[in-house]
Amino acid sequence: MTDVTNTTRENPRKVREGIVVSDKMNSTLVVAVNERVSHARYGKTVQRTKKLYVHDEKNEAKVGDRVRVQETRPLSKLKRWRLTEIVERAR
Image 1 (cartoon, one colour):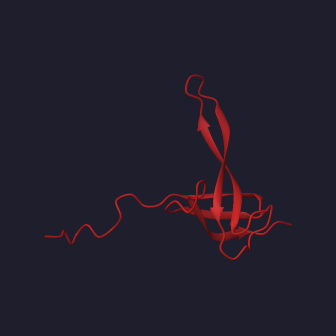
Image 2 (spheres, rainbow, N blue to C red):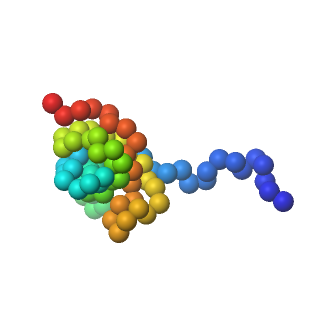
């Protein structure tokens, strides 16, 4: 017996926005995502940068572009994200 009321995902996929750092690989980007967190002891706001390996099927994003990425199933050893849209092109 299935529950019809629970049709939405309980854990929706994460979405992040960052800047493309590298596009040297085929169909893969490296995106730097900045996160502002409060320091555990001192309370000061600090920036943490995380590099995400992103799947870009058409090789359309270039270095410096601001992109939006979404979590996905593992595509390779390091790739767990895919490109959803290019928010802003590099100047």
